[in-house]
Image (cartoon, rainbow, N blue to C red):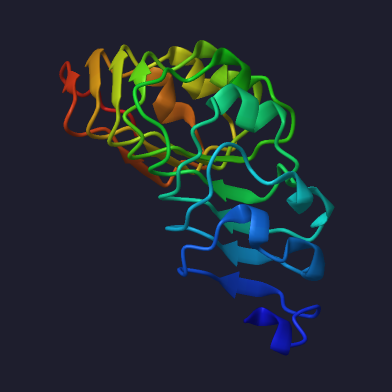
Length: 194
């Protein structure tokens, strides 16, 4: 179907055709910057043939079947880690591995709607993220104070989880934070942060 077009100069593609990763023409899309590949039949891990796509800025793999553990997806990820990777609605009942916070170069984490369980790893403070989206999961425990060390954090979404305890006061020291959503948790009284 795509073979009738010269797709080598395309910078964006949106596929809602339920195209499986093994037949998608990644090698013909070397200029690709904005692939929206959500709601398809990608399964396992992120296709390794995407590793040659050096111009990626944003990639959406939401609502697929990336059943591979998050740890393997992050460490084996062939993609430009500076790209905005959307992995919403892929996993089920697994914890966030601590390694995700120590993987060099990851800027944005979008893992909402994944039925993730357990606490947020304290290792998230090892990198400066712009967006941290962990909402609408089953994450529990306290919100780590180490999130206050993410000096470039702009958006923090932890709403609709099972967090408890106090909200770390040092979140109020984040000078670039413009949006924080913590509702629908079992948190104590909200301190005055700003």
